[in-house]
Length: 195
Image (cartoon, rainbow, N blue to C red; front, side, top):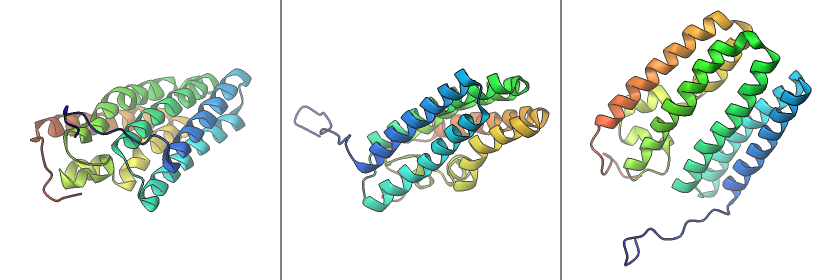
């Protein structure tokens, strides 16, 4: 903190943030192209760049010691940009996915975003460290299997089994709402162990 109680300047220019920016620009650009050209191949490329880039920016941040709270928020916002563009293209290409994708978008864009930003209540670098605050909420939302189920499973089910995807998306939304309520009830402050 500075003498005025302000946080010191943040570093926006680092390798993980550059990866986040590049994967977001590429994924959104390809998703828009998929939308305008009605191309499944471009949509697949958009999703792959989004998902691989999302893994890569996090791994790079940890490997280079460049994790920042600003980078975590940037990643959360970028995920929503990629997801919304890809989802729009998917619904245009496959109108039968509209209901499960709409449920997923509400859950991901509103409920999950608020939940993901809850890490800011504690001195954590990102939601990836939420286990230091609550193991159960971490396991349900940010463990590697939970992350895969949160986005990829819903999208793949929407493509291959839209009716099952509706049930699954509602289930994920229920987990997110319960997690959000539980996280909101936790006392803010220092986690049980230091980061």
